[in-house]
Image 1 (cartoon, rainbow, N blue to C red):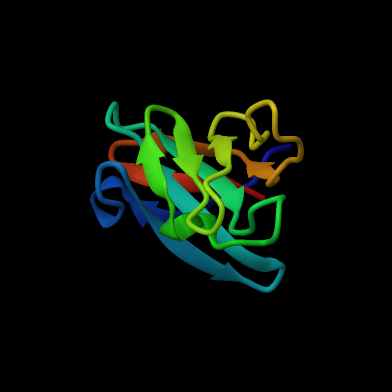
Image 2 (cartoon, rainbow, N blue to C red):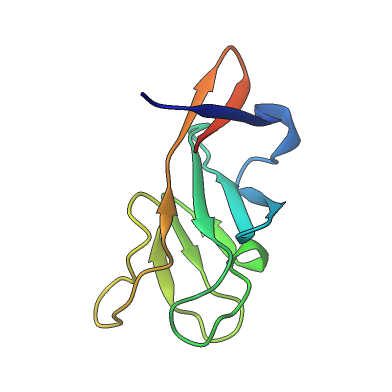
Length: 102
C-alpha cells in the first residue's frame, strides 16, 4: 500500500524554481518545471554534494550551482559524461496539491 504525504501546493514552488523540504532523512529539493511538473531529489549533487535546490532549472534538468553538473529531474541521474545519482523521490499532484510518496 502506498502512503502519500501532502508537502506543498503547486503555487509554493515557483516555475523553473525550487523549494527545500526539511526531513529527518535530510533535505529534499522540490523542483517545478515550466510545464508544471514537480520533481523531488535529495538536495545533494552526486559530484561534491552541492545544493541542487540552488541550481538553474531548464526543461526537466537542473544544473548544480557549484560545478555545473546537469542532473535529470525525472530519474536523478547525472547527464553523461558525468556519472552519479542524486536519488529521486516520487511525487504526484492532485488539484494543485503536491504529495510525496513515503
